Length: 537
Image (tube, rainbow, N blue to C red; front, side, top):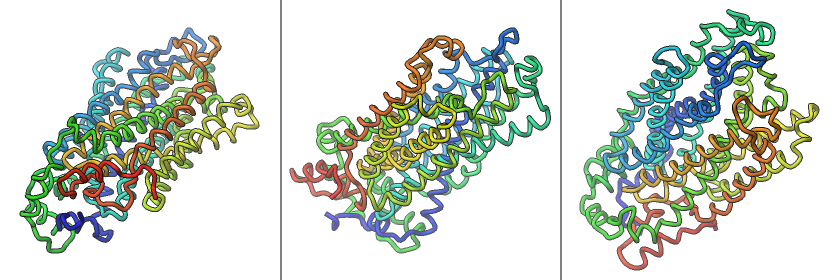
């Protein structure tokens, strides 16, 4: 089978790690830096939005966003992301990775800036504008998932491909960290200038009109890193795998990669013609042939990402409530509006620095040694263990003397989601499907993940509310409480282990070997392509 591989694709597979690999990681990774910044910075400013637009100074506590508004503000970008993953994933296979890549980035830049603008200063006007532009921001972010993963997998060599794709995804960690740091800088500057009293000391004086700029600056800053990389994205050549196997232009593929690799590569038009005309290059996404070869793989990649994101996004969205429970964030009436932003940002930055960022880079370091399967099973296993370890003795962890232990355990769940399924669910769909369907299948898998994120974000916003009506957040019904929410998440993570058994190991194999695109026609082709082992040997 290897004898049928095109010279240009083989040259990419066996290429030593070179400067262009790192350039591709930075160019694709800055998109993910922006994605994470934009998606997660909203959790830093929702409390501030509640104070500015929904405070009634006759009441003992400052205002919070009503439940439906909170759900819309935090969830609308996720809905846009889901739609963008499906649309741009499909478009990336139809028009080419490069053509669509610049479009998603420009959408992100424009909508990041527009998120900080609003029509009028009434709560309805501000929230409606914010939700509208955050939907389209999410739409652009959604396109970055399948395109960045596919481009990196198609540029990489087979020895270190996992590390390169994971490194692109790991830039998310720096994006989350940057969100916290920007919020810390902006809130510190405002706190230094105004030195506002807490809400219980002076209800009216704890909020000043210029605080309206704080959340706008934090959201709009997301446009900066994306804009800086636009030029370099446009300079990248189309991937050789798309040009050869999908666009069927052997000369262009050889010419592009000759420049990138700085070696002479033969076009091999006859060999390409023979490859693309074979039966295993003709089946579509909804064909029986695809179902035989890759049906279970697609089920595995979609369901594991769905389950992972339920747990991952619900943690992020009620983490500020956990910080309140352990005393990192005092009751809202004991702080001014700007001090609350500072406290939430400090807590998120500490978690990102101690667990989120290291977890991503552990995956980068070990993915091509341990394999995707091992890291994903291990991650889901430890997430299950730590969720149950937090939930079962939950009352023990909330006592003052045990609070630091609670944060350490909570950090470990983040660490093992990132040194685990949060990274591998992104990597594997970019490797195991045929070139002409790769971006589409990655988009479908990622969209399933965002459906899980929406369940986590919307569902656990309500579920994590206390059973005691006197302790629930303003405007919310009673829920099942944080303890039971953590138990449910533990069960979800356990199912993640089971569905990982459907996902093949892709370590050390070429993309064409994994997808069966090098195989000769015949009955044995289906057996080879569809029988990728689910357990590494």
